[in-house]
Amino acid sequence: MSTKKTGLETVTSSFAPSTSTVELQPSYNIPIVLLISAIPLVVVQLWVGIVIALLGLFLLIQTLTIRLHFTPTDLDIYRGEKLLRSFPYQEWQNWRIFWNGIPILFYFKEVNSIHFLPILFDPKTLKSCLEERCPRI
Image (cartoon, rainbow, N blue to C red; front, side, top):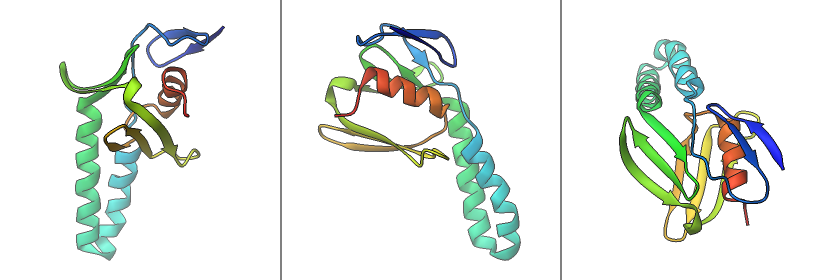
Protein backbone atom coordinates (compact mmCIF):
# COMPACT_ATOMS: atom_id res chain seq x y z
CA MET A 1 0.00 0.00 0.00
CA SER A 2 1.31 3.47 -0.86
CA THR A 3 0.31 7.03 -0.05
CA LYS A 4 0.49 9.80 -2.64
CA LYS A 5 -0.04 13.51 -2.10
CA THR A 6 -2.19 14.99 -4.89
CA GLY A 7 -3.28 18.56 -5.57
CA LEU A 8 -6.28 18.42 -3.22
CA GLU A 9 -5.90 15.44 -0.97
CA THR A 10 -3.80 12.52 0.07
CA VAL A 11 -4.76 9.41 -1.84
CA THR A 12 -3.89 6.04 -0.35
CA SER A 13 -3.70 3.31 -2.94
CA SER A 14 -3.09 -0.38 -3.09
CA PHE A 15 -4.02 -2.54 -6.04
CA ALA A 16 -7.73 -1.73 -5.63
CA PRO A 17 -9.20 1.34 -7.35
CA SER A 18 -9.48 4.45 -5.24
CA THR A 19 -12.81 5.29 -3.64
CA SER A 20 -12.09 9.02 -3.43
CA THR A 21 -12.73 11.77 -5.97
CA VAL A 22 -9.78 13.90 -7.09
CA GLU A 23 -10.23 17.28 -8.79
CA LEU A 24 -7.22 18.26 -10.88
CA GLN A 25 -5.77 21.69 -10.24
CA PRO A 26 -5.47 24.01 -13.26
CA SER A 27 -2.16 24.54 -15.03
CA TYR A 28 -1.72 27.75 -17.02
CA ASN A 29 1.53 26.68 -18.73
CA ILE A 30 0.20 26.11 -22.26
CA PRO A 31 -1.97 29.27 -22.48
CA ILE A 32 0.81 31.47 -21.08
CA VAL A 33 3.44 30.04 -23.46
CA LEU A 34 1.11 30.60 -26.42
CA LEU A 35 0.30 34.18 -25.39
CA ILE A 36 3.95 35.05 -24.81
CA SER A 37 5.05 33.46 -28.09
CA ALA A 38 2.32 35.36 -29.95
CA ILE A 39 3.94 38.72 -29.12
CA PRO A 40 7.04 38.36 -31.34
CA LEU A 41 5.01 36.46 -33.94
CA VAL A 42 2.69 39.46 -34.36
CA VAL A 43 5.73 41.53 -35.33
CA VAL A 44 7.11 38.91 -37.74
CA GLN A 45 3.86 37.50 -39.18
CA LEU A 46 0.72 39.37 -38.12
CA TRP A 47 -1.89 36.70 -38.93
CA VAL A 48 0.06 33.86 -37.39
CA GLY A 49 0.60 35.90 -34.22
CA ILE A 50 -3.09 36.75 -34.00
CA VAL A 51 -4.13 33.11 -34.46
CA ILE A 52 -1.67 31.95 -31.77
CA ALA A 53 -2.85 34.72 -29.42
CA LEU A 54 -6.50 33.76 -29.95
CA LEU A 55 -5.71 30.11 -29.30
CA GLY A 56 -3.85 31.12 -26.12
CA LEU A 57 -6.84 33.22 -24.95
CA PHE A 58 -9.26 30.39 -25.72
CA LEU A 59 -7.16 27.90 -23.75
CA LEU A 60 -6.79 30.40 -20.89
CA ILE A 61 -10.58 30.68 -20.64
CA GLN A 62 -10.88 26.89 -20.74
CA THR A 63 -8.26 26.59 -18.00
CA LEU A 64 -10.23 28.99 -15.83
CA THR A 65 -13.58 27.25 -16.32
CA ILE A 66 -13.05 23.52 -16.98
CA ARG A 67 -12.30 20.99 -14.23
CA LEU A 68 -11.55 17.28 -14.41
CA HIS A 69 -12.75 15.04 -11.59
CA PHE A 70 -11.47 11.49 -11.23
CA THR A 71 -14.24 9.61 -9.43
CA PRO A 72 -14.02 5.95 -8.43
CA THR A 73 -15.77 4.92 -11.69
CA ASP A 74 -15.57 7.83 -14.18
CA LEU A 75 -13.60 10.78 -15.46
CA ASP A 76 -16.04 13.70 -15.16
CA ILE A 77 -15.60 17.02 -16.94
CA TYR A 78 -17.20 20.06 -15.30
CA ARG A 79 -17.67 23.69 -16.27
CA GLY A 80 -18.22 25.38 -12.94
CA GLU A 81 -20.80 23.24 -11.14
CA LYS A 82 -22.30 21.80 -14.34
CA LEU A 83 -21.31 18.28 -15.42
CA LEU A 84 -20.49 18.42 -19.14
CA ARG A 85 -19.53 14.81 -19.78
CA SER A 86 -18.71 11.62 -17.99
CA PHE A 87 -16.29 8.96 -19.29
CA PRO A 88 -16.62 5.58 -17.50
CA TYR A 89 -13.24 3.87 -17.05
CA GLN A 90 -14.77 0.51 -18.01
CA GLU A 91 -15.11 1.81 -21.60
CA TRP A 92 -11.48 2.97 -21.85
CA GLN A 93 -9.14 0.94 -24.02
CA ASN A 94 -5.97 3.02 -23.79
CA TRP A 95 -4.58 6.38 -22.71
CA ARG A 96 -1.37 8.31 -23.19
CA ILE A 97 0.22 11.64 -22.21
CA PHE A 98 2.27 13.01 -25.07
CA TRP A 99 5.74 14.42 -24.48
CA ASN A 100 6.66 13.41 -20.96
CA GLY A 101 9.23 16.20 -20.54
CA ILE A 102 6.74 18.89 -21.48
CA PRO A 103 3.29 17.29 -21.30
CA ILE A 104 0.90 19.14 -23.60
CA LEU A 105 -1.60 16.58 -24.86
CA PHE A 106 -3.70 13.90 -23.18
CA TYR A 107 -5.15 11.14 -25.36
CA PHE A 108 -7.57 8.42 -24.41
CA LYS A 109 -9.51 5.89 -26.44
CA GLU A 110 -12.88 4.56 -25.50
CA VAL A 111 -14.70 1.67 -27.13
CA ASN A 112 -16.48 3.97 -29.62
CA SER A 113 -14.41 7.16 -29.70
CA ILE A 114 -11.01 8.82 -29.37
CA HIS A 115 -10.39 11.97 -27.32
CA PHE A 116 -7.54 14.50 -27.29
CA LEU A 117 -7.35 17.13 -24.56
CA PRO A 118 -4.73 19.82 -24.05
CA ILE A 119 -3.18 19.49 -20.62
CA LEU A 120 -4.70 22.45 -18.83
CA PHE A 121 -4.40 20.81 -15.42
CA ASP A 122 -1.67 19.40 -13.19
CA PRO A 123 0.09 16.74 -15.33
CA LYS A 124 1.62 14.85 -12.37
CA THR A 125 -1.72 14.37 -10.65
CA LEU A 126 -3.30 13.47 -13.99
CA LYS A 127 -0.75 10.73 -14.58
CA SER A 128 -1.00 9.31 -11.05
CA CYS A 129 -4.82 9.23 -11.24
CA LEU A 130 -4.71 7.54 -14.63
CA GLU A 131 -2.21 4.92 -13.48
CA GLU A 132 -4.25 4.21 -10.37
CA ARG A 133 -7.75 4.17 -11.83
CA CYS A 134 -7.33 2.84 -15.36
CA PRO A 135 -3.98 1.13 -15.93
CA ARG A 136 -2.93 0.78 -19.55
CA ILE A 137 -3.52 -2.50 -21.29
